[in-house]
Length: 86
Image (tube, rainbow, N blue to C red):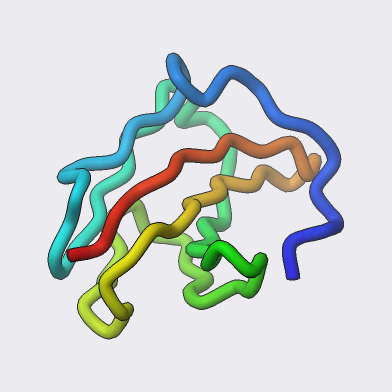
């Protein structure tokens, strides 16, 4: 479960995910590219479904529904975006 994250920044301006809704792949665009990120796809129960370091994530195995994408830096500061898998 995602309960160890420290803080968030304004994810509206610093990260975008597309397409949204998505079918097979989710693309991530970050304004702050100087940091290494780990990406977590989390269901609405807080369970980590996918963990990846790439900015293009295969979500084809996910069931249709709503998810949250977390981009976590080494400092444990994070960005988050909601997306829909259909």
